[in-house]
Length: 184
Image (cartoon, rainbow, N blue to C red; front, side, top):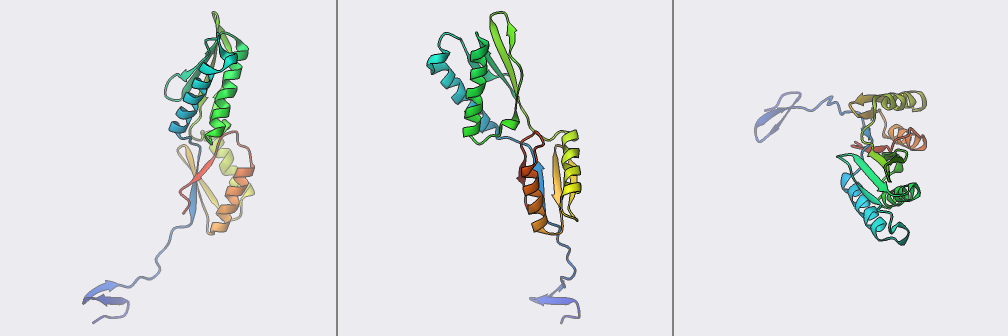
Protein backbone atom coordinates (compact mmCIF):
# COMPACT_ATOMS: atom_id res chain seq x y z
CA UNK A 1 0.00 0.00 0.00
CA UNK A 2 1.63 3.16 -1.06
CA UNK A 3 0.47 6.62 -0.46
CA UNK A 4 1.10 9.74 -2.49
CA UNK A 5 4.83 10.44 -2.88
CA UNK A 6 5.88 6.83 -2.23
CA UNK A 7 6.48 3.83 -4.40
CA UNK A 8 6.63 0.22 -3.33
CA UNK A 9 9.15 -2.36 -4.35
CA UNK A 10 8.62 -5.76 -2.77
CA UNK A 11 6.30 -4.19 -0.18
CA UNK A 12 9.02 -1.79 1.08
CA UNK A 13 7.94 1.84 0.89
CA UNK A 14 10.53 4.17 -0.64
CA UNK A 15 10.34 7.96 -0.90
CA UNK A 16 9.59 9.24 -4.39
CA UNK A 17 12.45 10.93 -6.21
CA UNK A 18 11.46 14.50 -6.81
CA UNK A 19 13.53 17.62 -7.16
CA UNK A 20 16.86 15.82 -7.10
CA UNK A 21 19.55 18.44 -7.74
CA UNK A 22 22.19 17.34 -10.20
CA UNK A 23 25.48 19.20 -9.89
CA UNK A 24 26.37 21.65 -12.63
CA UNK A 25 28.76 20.40 -15.30
CA UNK A 26 32.38 21.19 -14.45
CA UNK A 27 36.01 20.51 -15.28
CA UNK A 28 39.38 21.18 -13.67
CA UNK A 29 42.18 23.23 -15.18
CA UNK A 30 45.54 21.80 -14.11
CA UNK A 31 49.19 22.12 -15.07
CA UNK A 32 50.77 18.71 -14.61
CA UNK A 33 53.16 16.59 -16.60
CA UNK A 34 53.58 12.84 -16.57
CA UNK A 35 56.82 12.33 -14.62
CA UNK A 36 57.43 8.99 -16.34
CA UNK A 37 57.25 10.59 -19.80
CA UNK A 38 59.70 13.31 -18.71
CA UNK A 39 62.00 10.62 -17.33
CA UNK A 40 61.81 8.71 -20.62
CA UNK A 41 62.57 11.89 -22.62
CA UNK A 42 65.50 12.72 -20.33
CA UNK A 43 66.93 9.20 -20.65
CA UNK A 44 66.56 9.27 -24.45
CA UNK A 45 68.25 12.69 -24.61
CA UNK A 46 71.09 11.53 -22.35
CA UNK A 47 71.60 8.45 -24.53
CA UNK A 48 71.61 10.53 -27.73
CA UNK A 49 74.07 13.04 -26.26
CA UNK A 50 76.36 10.18 -25.18
CA UNK A 51 76.42 8.62 -28.67
CA UNK A 52 76.19 11.58 -31.07
CA UNK A 53 79.35 12.48 -32.97
CA UNK A 54 79.19 16.24 -32.33
CA UNK A 55 79.10 15.65 -28.55
CA UNK A 56 82.23 13.45 -28.46
CA UNK A 57 84.94 14.74 -26.16
CA UNK A 58 82.69 17.35 -24.53
CA UNK A 59 81.68 15.30 -21.46
CA UNK A 60 78.08 16.43 -21.94
CA UNK A 61 75.65 14.96 -19.42
CA UNK A 62 71.90 15.31 -18.86
CA UNK A 63 70.59 14.07 -15.51
CA UNK A 64 68.03 14.56 -12.75
CA UNK A 65 69.13 16.96 -10.01
CA UNK A 66 66.34 16.25 -7.53
CA UNK A 67 62.65 15.46 -7.85
CA UNK A 68 61.71 18.19 -10.37
CA UNK A 69 65.12 19.61 -11.40
CA UNK A 70 67.30 18.75 -14.39
CA UNK A 71 71.03 19.35 -14.73
CA UNK A 72 72.89 19.69 -18.05
CA UNK A 73 76.69 19.87 -18.00
CA UNK A 74 79.25 20.23 -20.79
CA UNK A 75 82.76 21.52 -21.40
CA UNK A 76 81.52 24.10 -23.93
CA UNK A 77 78.62 26.51 -23.74
CA UNK A 78 77.48 25.64 -27.28
CA UNK A 79 77.27 21.90 -26.52
CA UNK A 80 75.35 22.60 -23.30
CA UNK A 81 72.83 24.67 -25.31
CA UNK A 82 72.69 21.92 -27.96
CA UNK A 83 71.96 19.36 -25.21
CA UNK A 84 69.01 21.54 -24.11
CA UNK A 85 67.74 21.43 -27.71
CA UNK A 86 68.04 17.63 -27.75
CA UNK A 87 66.08 17.41 -24.48
CA UNK A 88 63.38 19.77 -25.79
CA UNK A 89 63.04 17.70 -28.97
CA UNK A 90 62.60 14.51 -26.93
CA UNK A 91 60.00 16.21 -24.69
CA UNK A 92 58.01 17.34 -27.74
CA UNK A 93 58.10 13.82 -29.22
CA UNK A 94 56.70 12.51 -25.93
CA UNK A 95 53.82 15.02 -26.01
CA UNK A 96 55.08 17.27 -23.21
CA UNK A 97 54.69 21.01 -23.66
CA UNK A 98 57.88 23.06 -23.50
CA UNK A 99 55.99 25.46 -21.22
CA UNK A 100 56.41 22.80 -18.53
CA UNK A 101 60.22 23.15 -18.72
CA UNK A 102 61.99 26.19 -17.30
CA UNK A 103 65.62 26.39 -18.43
CA UNK A 104 68.20 28.72 -16.89
CA UNK A 105 71.21 30.40 -18.47
CA UNK A 106 74.54 28.57 -18.86
CA UNK A 107 76.79 29.18 -15.86
CA UNK A 108 80.51 28.43 -15.93
CA UNK A 109 81.96 26.53 -13.00
CA UNK A 110 85.64 25.90 -13.59
CA UNK A 111 85.94 24.14 -16.95
CA UNK A 112 82.30 23.04 -16.99
CA UNK A 113 79.23 24.91 -18.22
CA UNK A 114 76.12 24.00 -16.30
CA UNK A 115 72.48 24.67 -17.18
CA UNK A 116 69.81 24.05 -14.57
CA UNK A 117 66.28 23.25 -15.61
CA UNK A 118 63.08 22.72 -13.70
CA UNK A 119 59.85 20.87 -14.45
CA UNK A 120 56.90 23.16 -13.68
CA UNK A 121 53.92 21.49 -11.99
CA UNK A 122 50.76 23.13 -10.68
CA UNK A 123 49.29 26.56 -11.28
CA UNK A 124 50.81 29.31 -9.15
CA UNK A 125 48.40 31.56 -7.26
CA UNK A 126 49.01 34.68 -9.40
CA UNK A 127 48.56 32.74 -12.67
CA UNK A 128 45.43 31.06 -11.25
CA UNK A 129 44.00 34.52 -10.52
CA UNK A 130 44.79 35.64 -14.10
CA UNK A 131 43.08 32.56 -15.53
CA UNK A 132 40.02 33.01 -13.27
CA UNK A 133 39.78 36.70 -14.25
CA UNK A 134 40.10 35.75 -17.94
CA UNK A 135 37.24 33.24 -17.55
CA UNK A 136 35.06 35.83 -15.79
CA UNK A 137 35.79 38.56 -18.36
CA UNK A 138 35.97 36.58 -21.61
CA UNK A 139 33.92 33.47 -20.86
CA UNK A 140 30.18 32.99 -21.35
CA UNK A 141 27.79 34.31 -18.73
CA UNK A 142 27.06 31.90 -15.91
CA UNK A 143 30.48 30.23 -15.85
CA UNK A 144 32.39 30.37 -12.57
CA UNK A 145 36.03 29.60 -11.81
CA UNK A 146 37.21 28.66 -8.32
CA UNK A 147 40.85 28.37 -7.31
CA UNK A 148 41.45 25.09 -5.47
CA UNK A 149 45.08 24.85 -4.41
CA UNK A 150 47.21 24.48 -7.54
CA UNK A 151 44.26 23.98 -9.91
CA UNK A 152 41.02 25.68 -10.95
CA UNK A 153 37.50 24.23 -10.99
CA UNK A 154 35.34 25.71 -13.73
CA UNK A 155 31.59 25.12 -13.57
CA UNK A 156 28.56 26.35 -15.45
CA UNK A 157 24.96 25.56 -16.33
CA UNK A 158 25.63 24.31 -19.87
CA UNK A 159 28.27 21.95 -21.23
CA UNK A 160 28.50 24.08 -24.37
CA UNK A 161 29.65 27.04 -22.26
CA UNK A 162 32.35 24.90 -20.66
CA UNK A 163 33.56 23.71 -24.06
CA UNK A 164 33.71 27.36 -25.14
CA UNK A 165 35.83 28.19 -22.08
CA UNK A 166 38.20 25.29 -22.88
CA UNK A 167 38.70 26.50 -26.45
CA UNK A 168 39.29 30.10 -25.26
CA UNK A 169 41.84 28.93 -22.69
CA UNK A 170 43.64 26.85 -25.34
CA UNK A 171 43.92 29.92 -27.57
CA UNK A 172 45.27 32.15 -24.78
CA UNK A 173 48.91 32.00 -23.61
CA UNK A 174 49.31 32.05 -19.82
CA UNK A 175 52.94 30.93 -19.92
CA UNK A 176 52.20 27.48 -18.50
CA UNK A 177 51.02 24.18 -19.95
CA UNK A 178 47.30 23.72 -19.23
CA UNK A 179 45.37 20.45 -19.20
CA UNK A 180 41.64 19.97 -18.73
CA UNK A 181 40.59 17.01 -16.58
CA UNK A 182 37.53 15.67 -14.70
CA UNK A 183 35.07 16.92 -17.31
CA UNK A 184 31.63 15.99 -16.00
